[in-house]
Length: 281
Image 1: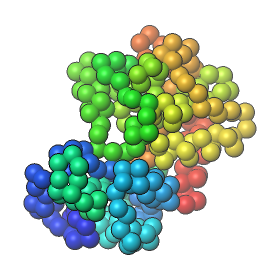
Image 2: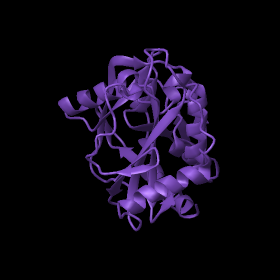
Image 3: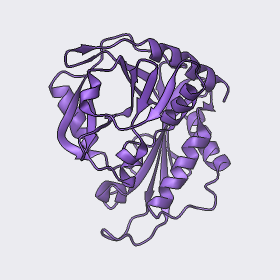
Image 4: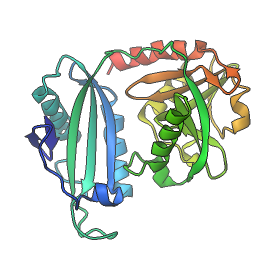
């Protein structure tokens, strides 16, 4: 079942048309949310990011868009898909109503909630080889809009195609200054000695929910230091570890970039702390 603006519809229902502004202009935002046993992971940060992003895109926020209301809509969707006792990936998409060309006829919004079962109730570290390469065909601009989780993700799409065609598991994206900012589907962390580095939001990386959680965890972990700083491509092969984060998979360790092989000791340590924090929600 799909939740379309509060109405539950069958998955094959035709409820959108060619005038949809998310389709026509990418005039949409989305949140990808992890829910386990009907408990939403990091719901408040997701909600606050969505509200802030809607304001940046000048979307009118409905009066009923409270944390409690949207949580109830998510829970209703999960229940109607009979996934209350499962680990679930929820996608919450919000878009401006039909009308207008580039300039919208209205700033009113509609939303869609989708729910899909995922395998693991806890974050687990993938032990399989995971090789990445730089994607340099196109750049991500280091502006505020690049930090939003919007439907404008064509660079990520092309990078994903590049990775698939060339036998990589993922690609790392660069901005117009040729600094490394993130992967196609997650924020990037680099470990060198006892220092963990991640690009600042000003570089154009996604303002990731799990990125913030990891920064907080690292700040409280004895023996580790976190810094938000520019990462150049030359630093990648000098690092001890590279790992990616997103709210669905948690932490993904990169095992290889070009000729460099990486360990995953810090990622293992942080994964345990991340699971402990998620259980306390």
